Length: 517
Image (cartoon, rainbow, N blue to C red):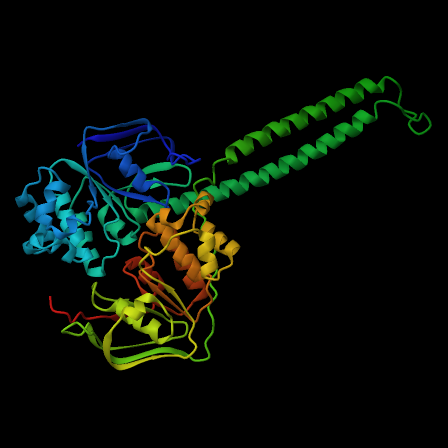
């Protein structure tokens, strides 16, 4: 057991006007199972790289521990090699028998170690890397979003595996994974950093109570400041009126006054001015106590979606449908049946490779959505797959690699109102400085937010979102949940976030993978 002490850490990227971290201090224990939480772009991956010594910084990070990082880098040249060949490069000095011991809890066959890495699925690659990662003895492990692009079954395996381990920092936006695997949280708030015991839900419940108390205190201070200001204004007016009455008076109208009353009036005025000064000091104290109360409050901005109403209730009808690619010996799936009616949310669920994305591509093609992806599809199909005529679809692809150029060019290409587009990105917590960058320089989470914002601004009968939440921070996920609940758009989704699916409800369409193992 060792400590990692961060003292007065300040870091910024060259050419960036704002500090990523500014005079930050905290300590963590290397025996903890630490969840790392924060908005996209707040500096989670940057902090992991600082621990690894990749950047220069001001302040100090003191520890005797050795760090290892997931995911390991795999180059194009590496992809033709097996994990057995690559693991010495990933973790120098690793012992094969230790890696083999880790395969069982990850439900992996040892034979996967000897396959070319490029032939493995996302889930198999992730689990093999985790097996190598945890095969050391005293390393403190930095695990950066291990469940992106994984199906529900693989997520459950990794969740159980990480729950049995300790001594790591886990960066994840999956609330279910965080609750199952961590015993402490490190949170990058809007302006501060905090370390707390407990899992995500425990921290979030306490934060909601703290935020509610801060709002109540803020309102109390605002009322007190308003009352003090009114009292100070009244006293100032009285003082000014009295002061003006010291010189000059009409003996006929004020027979009881004489020149000697000036001293009395002056003393009274001085007393009122002292009262004004006291009010102003009290106001300053109230304002000082009020400052900072709301600085870390997560106050999600309400967003809007503009669904269209189709003249038909039933938008999609699939019955006893089977699909096979022309160059494949076996069908991707057989006997698929489901419907999508207006106002419904339908989730396609199943393991990676079972055909969920293929169904989406077929639907888009039959609806007349023209993309290069669809033109590449050569399939044989049977059964019924009907799509309502004149159906307008808003689609989010799970791939973001095509995004490049400026936001203005992208908005023009998608026929989006540029001002509204930027406003929606701000509501999804985009920093203004990001608007000047090219999209290829965005993080994966920021790219996903671009796709989500574009989809939300596109009026449609049906919203098709294929794994929209990969890399999206937990606070934005909750914003999107509230949005869908409020406006109730018709949706077809592929998403493995358990909490997201539980929150939104809807129908589940399970797939059975008919491709032989």
